[in-house]
Image (cartoon, rainbow, N blue to C red):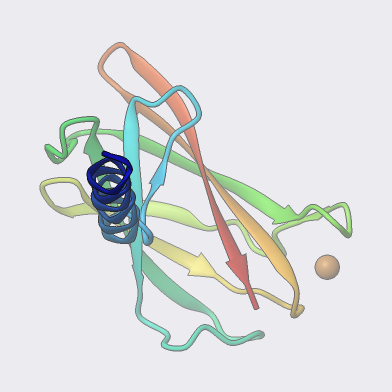
Length: 132
Ligand SMILES: [Cu+2]
């Protein structure tokens, strides 16, 4: 009796682990409208190097979000300062794939990249944490 319940519990926990591992490199926006991930052309990301990211924006069903307007802010919350550059999304490379140019981090520590997303009627902000 107890053992099959335990077995179900373990199976459920394993599904949770698999589901979260699958989404470990993407971030849901604050109101849940978008899921954002990124690919950096600088690997690994180090300080004091200007580089670019591709931001990948999908809706809650995983469908690429095209024609969105993205604006970038962020900084180091622990130091109360913003980004040292003004990174801009310059174009959409393909469906839901946006080129973000002009990133440079000047200190090691915890950064947050805030991406304000406007698509159709929806507006939302996704925050990507970055430990350097
Ligand atoms: Cu700092």
